[in-house]
Length: 391
Image (cartoon, rainbow, N blue to C red):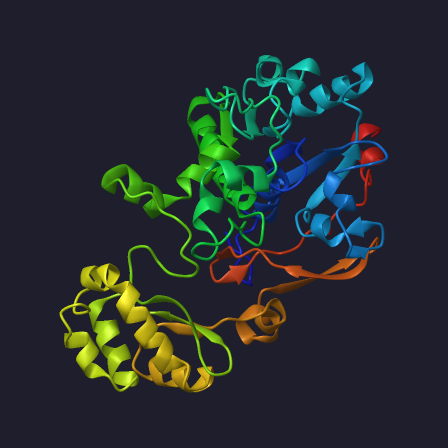
């Protein structure tokens, strides 16, 4: 059944209750994805403090940081001290009839509360239990660099240890982290996918599963072609700025006024690029005739392209390249993004009695051509204690 606006009625995960013990980014992003799809997410927070990201500002909106507000819509909030017998018992009671429990504490901490997968599934065999860790339950390695139980699971730590930081930045420059906590985001998406698969399996078997995703594993998986270049080709990649290790030209170029991206991903697109810049002979040069040869001779080709592109403004180059179907784009700032029609379409406004009218990024998921609704604004700390803990 669908509503008149094209959205399924009810939403796909309507009726699924999730007890969310997670905080910071990866776990809350996981549950926000599921909440946007209709799940009832109950966020369990520390009394008086709440999720760490409530204080990760400025900027703040009221008492809460914009960081927190970006990850917690469509959820309800309760406060429990899991370190007390009363708090742990209340948490166990909540999970007894829930469909999913998710946590991202260091390994062993939930067990110390009596809230580990074994304990909760003994009481509720249908429960899907998801654990997000930094490095899994095993030692990080034999080099003495720590274990999952002691090493902090911050995104920047995993960017360093997974190799991502070693391939990010300018040639011969210092390692650079990605400008957002991208590995937390990737981990959260893997976790949301795993939870939904486990729920599907439970529909078939009647038994819940334990889903585990570590930031390190998700991060290494995210290396995709760079990992394959090493595992299959023995190539140890390094930082290349905006250049692509396997495609040339595929990078940022500096026009006379600003930067733009050119992504000539095959030989025909390179030929068209050469026509646009008035140097068709470049495409017939044996050094540049195929992508493989262009990769081999990038040190000669790229400076030649840089010299030409520096002679004209970016808007002119972009117009000429777009006219012949060569992928290209200006390098935008964040304010430029939201000033564009496509960026403005991603802004979702939320009426929030606690924080006022909020503007945030909408879910990118569309069902039957329609975006997902905001059913609840990000919750104030403990806003649902009375309804959920003292009905």
